[in-house]
Image (cartoon, rainbow, N blue to C red; front, side):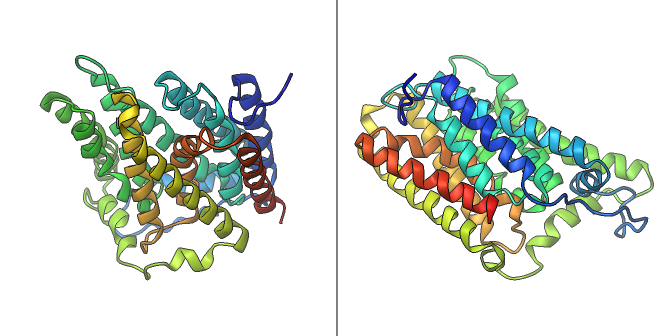
Length: 329
């Protein structure tokens, strides 16, 4: 069976996804945080992100297995979305293997479970918002997309920068006011539920929101850039450079695409800009860099399908090598 870089089948892309998922899971030391009885003022229970890191330290094998499943589920969600809505000029599951390489290369290894939880939530949110482009109401897709997005700040405060994707999706996909109310309920439900449970356990109802917003005022801008390893910075720069070229090609062929493909790609371009902007803020974390895998895997095939085969093969090999370098070095 011949392997085509550009026109990958589901089987070929799935093999790549599993291989890089196993590499990401088996690389690096086991992370996690030790259990502590001290809680911040006003908190009767830790934030879900803290609980997740504690669980990773207590159950390393189980956490790696869950991270592996989330890695594969997120990659399949991205690939299914790109193929179902015919985003590219030729049918391909290339987004799956691109997601695998970028997510593997950008994952830190020590905190793999929190990274994969955030990445899976982001992928599921983008998939559901993209699925809301239908004739008639799409309450389920809108609610799920907003709900997944609302969960992310509870696991990583810096992901609050992505919440504007809810109104962007509503306006871009021309949803009704009823669906806007459903989206508002979906995005607020995770935080309000956690705040209510915290208050019911004798905590402060406002404390979770305070501890989510506080990291945006602590530290300096661009702090994360100086902390990332060199190879990961090179991979981030390569992915962003390819994304800029892909966005330029998209603008040049704007009117040759279907309306649905145009809207979905615009949504992911906005999502990519918010992710990059979030990495420059004081609240940025290593886990947020892995979110680039979702947006880049949707945008980069726009570039690859327009290139000569040998050029696409070389660029694909470079991404694979950079991903392996980040894991092995």
